Amino acid sequence: MNYSSAPSAAAAGTVALGPLTVNRLGFGAMRITGPGIWGEPERPAEAKAVLRRAVELGCNFIDTADSYGPAVSERLIGETLAPYAAGVVIATKGGLTRPAPGRWERDAHPAHLRAACEGSLKRLKLDRIDVYQLHAPDPRVPYEESVGELVRLREEGKIRLIGLSNVTVAEIERARALTPIVSVQNRYDIESDAADPVLQYCDRERIAYIPWGPLGSGRLAAATIAALLARSKIMLPIPGTSSVAHLEENVAAAEPRA
Image 1 (cartoon, helix red, strand yellow):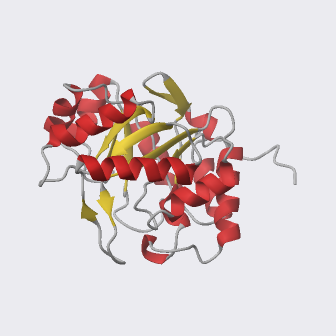
Image 2 (tube, rainbow, N blue to C red; image 1 turned 120 degrees about the vertical axis):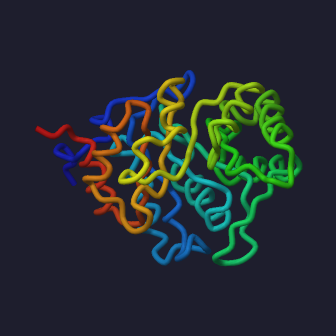
């Protein structure tokens, strides 16, 4: 097949993740699992084709989490993309558990985060995870203990860079008192979050901002992707899909409009 006229995520420009640089349109690998982000995908071959095509189209930032499946998304990424092409950055998250379909529970105890990171390394077939994100603060665990465990994992060479998810400005600042933070992944509604203080903080501090759920629910329309890219130079959208055709529509949104 001739892909010479295919869209490219590179058209969105780039964003820095600490010392790393990625194209400013990534791929979120949550929806390559089964319905409800639970279990195996209904079409495994299509899920793997989506991953391969995402990389071909220049989506060199792949975002996942151990809770997607659980474990399914990471395993599919490792099976499909490892060994990874030069420049591909893998980001994953730990700190949520899935005791049953439809349930998401927080567990940011240091022991759990360590075990989660070790599992992610194996499934992703990596010696070191490029960006490891705390999936959410756990009210049962002192926040500095959770972030501190990620710092220890980095010092041990198991992760390279640290990101946060589902956090406030105050929580970002508390984490930054312990370690550099390269990304923040928060829910973002483009219609109502124009004055979002976390995005404003990340914009000012040049921390990559990864929006999730920008439409609230449903498929991420190309117009929304373009609007997110225009919202801030540190915005790193990660639209996800289980369809190659839909993936190509999303990536086409990175092309500049006349």
